[in-house]
Each structure stands twice: as structure tokens, then as C-alpha cells.
Image 1 (cartoon, rainbow, N blue to C red):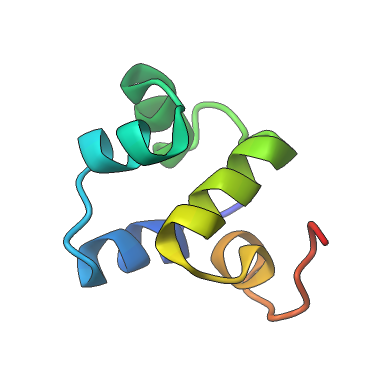
Image 2: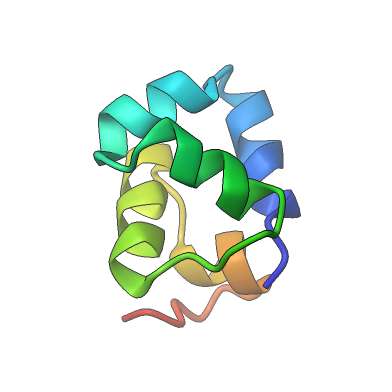
Length: 70
């Protein structure tokens, strides 16, 4: 799984990891590991990140617009 789109959306929206952590309930240390590719996002975490960033989870995490988590 590639998190480049998540990072890009965060940059576009001026969202810091602390903001994402607070908005999704995912601890900061866990987000750091996931965004560096050291661990994978759970489905519930993907859904929370996508909802916070107001983006399609398929686009954010898989590079498609098909809503892979739907």
C-alpha cells in the first residue's frame, strides 16, 4: 500500500499529523509508522482518514476511485 496520496492530500489541506491523529482517533506514533510504510493501515483506519480528509478511500490508498473499502 502506498501512502503518497494520503501525504499529498494532507499537504494540500495543510493537515499535520497531529491534526489527523486528533480527527481520526489514531495515535500519532501509529500514524507516523503507517505513513512511513512501517506498518499497514487497518480498514477502519483507512475509512477514518478518508472521512477526515473528505476523500475516496480507494483513491487515497489504492490509487483508484472505486472505493475499495465500501
